Length: 210
Image 1 (cartoon, rainbow, N blue to C red):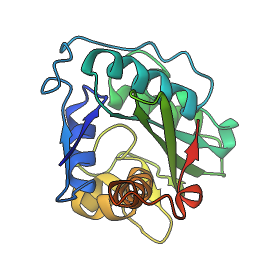
Image 2: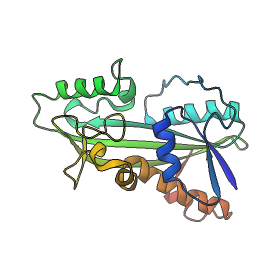
Image 3: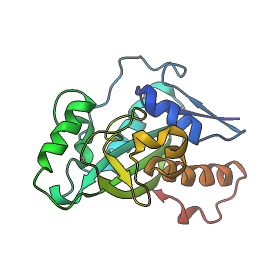
Image 4: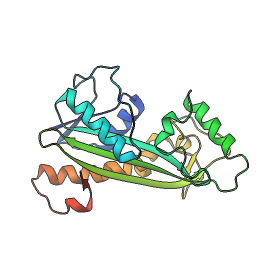
């Protein structure tokens, strides 16, 4: 059994990744289960999703002394030149709802509603001081108003391509099959299966080493 610590104190994100990373030979631990203090936080000073994911992974590994998976995700809106991007959670002070309202205000005169959700997962192995990265993307558009009660963050606004409902309307079960995070986790799952089998075959096609 391989134990991985998930570097997040976000209960929604923890539940989502644990559900997506369901492998009989892998156990995903919360920070609390790994002995990481509940108030432990990492300042996200990186300029890219990859940099921030690695910062978090290394910081949690220094306490947990175990392999760590860290996630950094964000929404990139075309009409806003990629904002909020790596600052998605910290774009403005306040709640998810307040950030959604800020985004709608920014787009009120824009006809281009195209956007993209991006996730980068960093798997950091402290014993060898190495990391592997797994990226997931999903394209869509920003709706005219918040819709739906599921999900978190910008889920009530984001409508993935091929659908008419937001992530928050589609619900967790559907979102977990097509989201940016689900796509990144799927690549991580393939890597973990090969890693546990002791095979390096095709690893280069599913991860980028640091």
